[in-house]
Image (cartoon, rainbow, N blue to C red; front, side):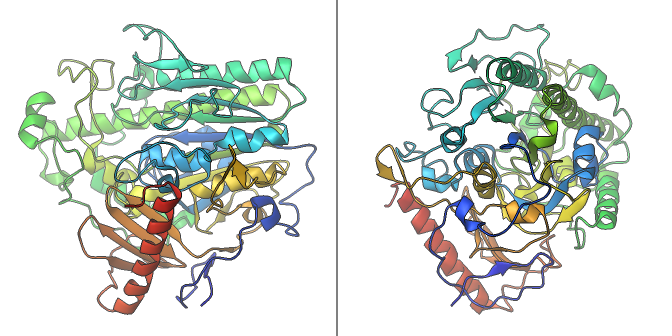
Length: 546
């Protein structure tokens, strides 16, 4: 049996499942592919931008109402990928981005977290041998991995460990050293501070290492809960969402279809799903107030008070996305000032779909505080999460499309001829590291710390920068919190914990509305066997074989 290529327009039919080909480094795998675009002068710089808990359809260039002119400009002068996948959760996704491995392979998302393998590497280890200086600012979230500077392969770092306070985080570090907690009332906001440190590192790079290429890993925490944003940003969206999540979903679906981003019906509103880590409805009402609702019910069934409260919450979420765009723009302006913008590869992703979670953490919620202020602790919830993930099912933590679909914008003026084009080639966060290594002209050494490392599971996306090219691979694998999925070609199996496997033809049904499992049990059986084989292998890679 042969391995199955993914077809860019989705016409591949399931023909069987087979073993993977012999491993080649990402650089070698594209030998003979030719340049992605115009000839570049020197190695490209890399700016990898990650946002947190942002839905697939939130930004303007993916059909949303949020004002994201910086990202929209990158998309208009670069590429948008329509079928990029995360892992459905913050730290496993960032594991894939930073290490190049599925999280299970480096013990970052098994049933229990164990030590980071001694053969494990992060981006700095791959790029420094190619002459790069490596910097990170924002959310690191590799909980069992080395710190960025101490054997983490990075040269400078600012890390936010407190994910519960956007205005005054209690725990953050500069170059692996603890900083004092930010005092309440300080002129601080996580997205702004993340950009400030990135700009500081880039300025130092320009002063001390102007002849070296750089990697800047810019990892925002927003719009992760709590919903908190500068008041001036929130004010931009007053009234924007008053018509509610049902109208919002319909309009987004229409825009996305017209833009060519999707080709599927709008999924049913996810009204019955109980969010993970859900606060009980009576506790939610007592702690947050009567405006909160525990499920994605029909908007017209809400009271006027609930409608006002919910619309105000979405305005804060939008403001957080907006602020990320502004801060990313400031970092890009610094890169332009350095004279290297044309030869900087910019990649933008979200670490998972929007969150349906209701959590009360940090300092709790002050019901007298204005929504979005430092004293408020609000979560987006399943109503608006469903809208943010239009047109898909489910949310963060699920591996249905709503949890794992991520925007991917790629911009590189010196290396990409295309302007404003779409790429329908399916890809995954495990492909990002191989792509950077490939574009940097590097190879993956088979050993690290004296131990042989498993081959990177991802593929370089280099060929897709020139054309909507096929990428041949056996499968894409997903597993988080016992939510499981496997994609082979256009076919996907998925299940929620102990529920039966579902089967969908993603060529026309990325909304996962028409389950084909009962009609095609043999296909389900074959794909389930492949998922189990991958699961066993990846757990063995991390040394967690039972």
